[in-house]
Length: 104
Image (cartoon, rainbow, N blue to C red; front, side, top):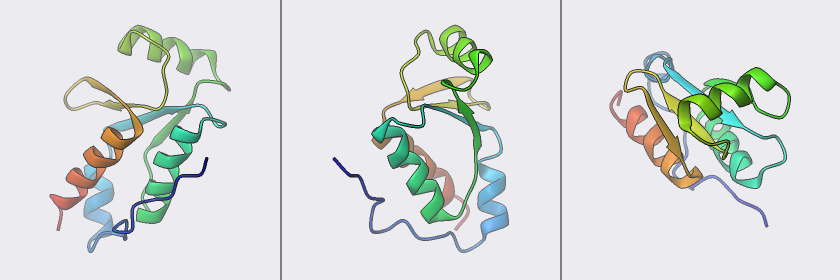
């Protein structure tokens, strides 16, 4: 099964401002997870970065996800400003798109 970014995934008009909107985010992921790859490809299409926390490469990341979010399901986006853990790739992509839209 392959996932593609949405056709509307184009880089924001003001990339510096958009990147600043994502400064408080951390994406917990597992490199072989297709749903994680969906989110990563979407970020790549937007030409934006968030802090990446690979739970397969770091026990500390896995423990942080378990303690903070209550489970180790990925992808999971930690939203620092709200101290919220957001699961589900489509919900994460929608959240990121909404944050970016605030800058345009």
